[in-house]
Image (cartoon, rainbow, N blue to C red):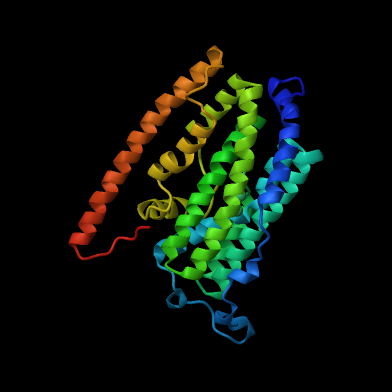
Length: 316
Ligand SMILES: [Fe+2]
Ligand SMILES: [Fe+2]
């Protein structure tokens, strides 16, 4: 990104907002320890140390909870890629650098806690998990050529999506221990979302048109990281069918509330480019809402069919 671009200027203007929000984050974040959330007394050795290797009947999680835990943990695992994306885009100096370090340390905690829980409770196959982690991390994650404003808009939505997904995964496990752990992680994700959301709020005031264009682009192209993760498509379908993360939640609990906070549809400070971007976004949201309604209706029909056959559909 050339230093003369309007976006680079916005980034420089955002620096004090970053510092202010880093302070806010550190004040708000409560220290917690992964080991407190793991039921260690359920742990035992695997065959390598004379115990027994994993087998499916040892898991207390059903197929839905397994799929969601697997995706959530692998998503956390690819942290080095996300760190690289953020550090490369925003630099490692000053408040940005401090934030990137702090954020990375917190995200690292999430992966540690989830893995410890899953290995100790034998929730998923640790061999499959490790192989998938190796593949996913080796490929890495690349968010493409997002501008800095697009990147902060994207992570605002992505952190909230992660929060919703962790929270609902916790409920889907049916295990109070996992539920407590995932609720704790979700609280962190919420604070991360607030950090990025506040930056975008400030960016709207600094450069309304560029910010509006960036937000519209990110909502219209939104994808969770993970598309190149093992079994991503299959697992995403399971997660959506159970209502852990689906289009309705994406529209109602992720996109809409953040856009409301930014007052995107109430602002009157856009030039022609901002107006156009807002119109494109409005049209996209109407389509997304309709698509979400169709998805929920077809899920209801599927659940009704299952219930008629005496099967219990998984839902949160
Ligand atoms: Fe996380
Ligand atoms: Fe996060």
